[in-house]
Length: 275
Ligand SMILES: C[S@@+](CC[C@H](N)C(=O)[O-])C[C@H]1O[C@@H](n2cnc3c(N)ncnc32)[C@H](O)[C@@H]1O
Image (tube, rainbow, N blue to C red):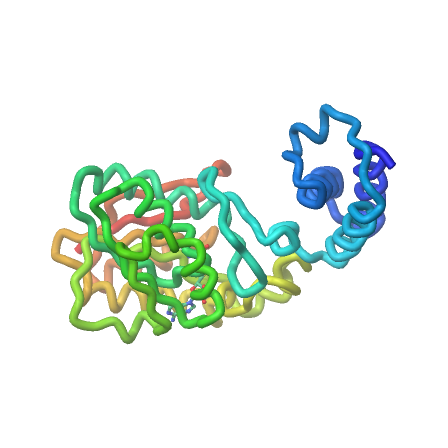
């Protein structure tokens, strides 16, 4: 069978299972199976071997049951770099990329020591360490399993990052120039309304922010007061619509806003603040 025929087959199969991204998912999965970049696959009419067809069908079946492509291929791009991902880690999101550029600008040419609270796959820490060569990091998470993915992704920086399995409340005796966090911020009762791709597969501990979505954000803000240097920066990703409640929390804890970053729909998604 030719690649274009198989891509059509996969796309139709996924469409029947109401997968909206059926075409691109089918292309990505075939490209993964045959080990040829998607762009190349689309301009050639490659003949696909029987063994590869079987594997492709199996992956299409998994995708038809809503398993995210990133978990099937164990890969997700974040700022054009590939990260190892499996069901133990939240899939890195484009909104989270918004945190990185302001950090790189503020701390360019400085000796940055930062904390990534809720490091997950390690995508935020990687992006900072990779660009700011004089930076060092501590990464923490309460999920032991996601930390093993973070360690894989951060292998090349093992001399500049230390990773611990602990909650933010337990960080003591350290002072950071920057605390960055993309905490779980979905309101508990909203979790069941998320798409099947998310609620059936992504780790609940990375999504559920408690009754008001702010459980972990509160902990990060409260703790940051004590572990941030006086001129340090707290950089938070927040959920859509959480700006005023998070700003209130920041003010009560003596933080003032420094930079706001909006997503492409003009929603405020990151707050940079300082004491
Ligand atoms: C939304 S995910 C973000 C993962 C990664 N930083 C990213 O941006 O893709 C939130 C992470 O925070 C972790 N987490 C949840 N509660 C925590 C807490 N109290 N202390 C530290 N980490 C926590 C979760 O296990 C999860 O990996």
